[in-house]
Length: 151
Image 1 (cartoon, rainbow, N blue to C red):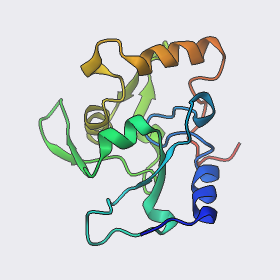
Image 2: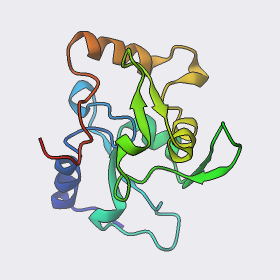
Image 3: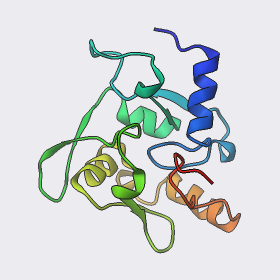
Image 4: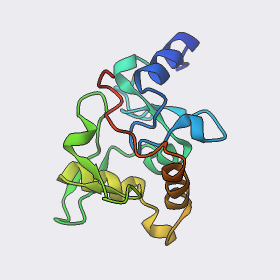
């Protein structure tokens, strides 16, 4: 499967150039973000249709890999990961008061935070927290709205 340039542009614009999982800004990074298949290409029902595509930073795309589920650390249950085409980010996540961490507020949010390591908890004050701290100082973070909402 190959995603054409028009679809790539649509996905980027639709996401307002934010990773649809961690809400990092593509503009603040050194590389273009990836086009992620929500239903991974390794599964038979995957498509290159826009409703199966999300914009993902390299970090989230790498942790997500071909996983569609994660473990909710609160309950131990296996839960489907956040789907940016079917769910609203703000229904499953909030920013910590200092804007440095994403807090999962539902089983889906917690399982997604855990699977994608959205707060670099495995890396003890890792690079994403340091980057967010700098973005906050620059006034670029956290994003005010879900990227799918109109300005």
